[in-house]
Image (tube, rainbow, N blue to C red; front, side, top):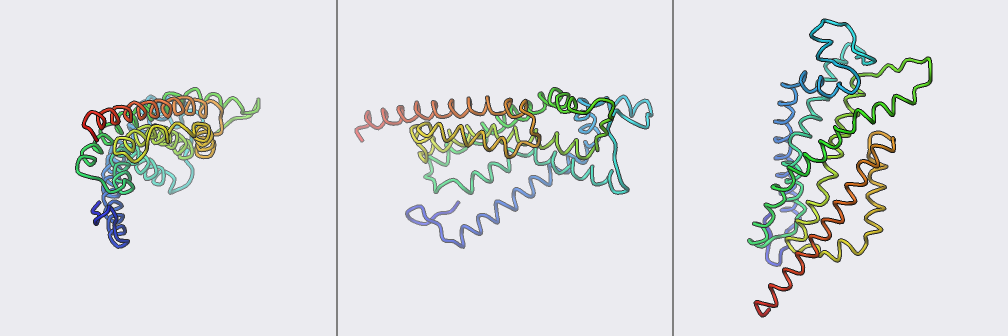
Length: 258
């Protein structure tokens, strides 16, 4: 982000920077979408496992797979497009999240810009951990939700709705796990102190809970608890790391005589 003296940027430069970041994100997501389209069958067979063994059904030539079905003439095409786009968002998330970070980060000095590379380095494993956790709880969450089906009734599940639910859970868990990365990186560049992160801890925990309740695709308590507990723990860990970093920075300033 190009800044003028004093770390300020004219409005026109902000808009140009935003356009540049949006275009880069669109290109990145498009590449991920192409990969999602190419590996479409591999993705859907893997995600369908909590409900049915779609791969075995395809190999045996079966005309159905558990309670899953596709409806409408355009249903198969819409399903592949939706899966490809959501898969692209998930596969490239660390890269387009970095574009977001690069835009919202304050005007940085050269040394702070070098520190900001920590974001992209840490974003990938944290997103992967969140996405894996989201995928891991799916079988249990699906069984719990299916358990509410009244006795003697059959629960037919529209396949595109099911995959939309699954991919959104994975994406949400992955993005949520980026919270400590943002906090620690903002602290590393001197934008947030550890005290500022941890002092309003009650508001943070309340905000995390509200976020999970509002954006989790399912309303089952299991998914919400599975996301809330590690997210709160990661927030507290990020705040603790920021406190230690502040102490190290203060000690360094004292030793240098500043």
